Image (cartoon, rainbow over all chains, first blue to last red; front, side):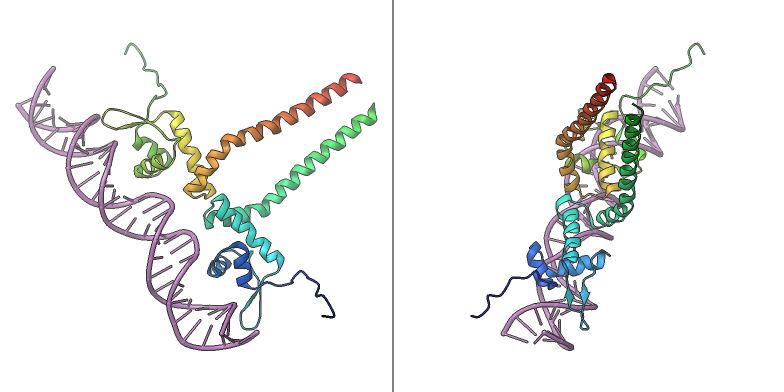
Length: 111
Length: 111
DNA sequence: ACTTTTTTTTCCTTGTAAGGCATACGAATT
DNA sequence: AATTCGTATGCCTTACAAGGAAAAAAAAGT
């Protein structure tokens, strides 16, 4: 064999591959796709799904919320929406802490 | 009228009173009582329930987790168990912040 | 004040609607 | 030959609500 094939990160994964990763049924993935906006794999002309690692990560988040935390689908949807706004809150928190840092540095200057 | 009766905080509330407070059916309260250990109202010989304010507060926590956060009952149970340990984490966080405060005060002393 | 009657509240058991998928299907691709 | 699709339907569990009898409370009668 002239070349040992290099194992490459795949760009796309099929629905059955994703299903196997999480040990769930493919129908669950299709169902969640209907329920959650953040799951939108690419589709070819026929409709076959192609999942990027980002898609898989999004699925993972939902899996965590529903299967591990024990949120209902509705609860998970709400949580995901709030997290978008939640980042603003985190941002605010960091901003506040930075202001405090600035204040402390100013105080050091005075000394 | 010799004495104006002083309005006193009630010691015990009936199941229908609690149901009205949260605008839920009384059967829900009985059901959650079976599902959650932390809801244990006193009962008289016949079985009638008497809720203290603590009981009501516990019910409130569950109400929040299930009806507002959107946890399944199982998820809420898990959350409650973890919170017992979780308070340690909050405690640790506050402790850390207090240590920082102490450190800052020491620095001020040095100056 | 004390029965009697009516209304309300309680209990527990059983019924049930919705949630959350899985299965089944033929058809279209690969 | 195997995978995939969408859609439909089936189905088990979850999460309560309704039903019905018994008891307590309130109202009414005497």
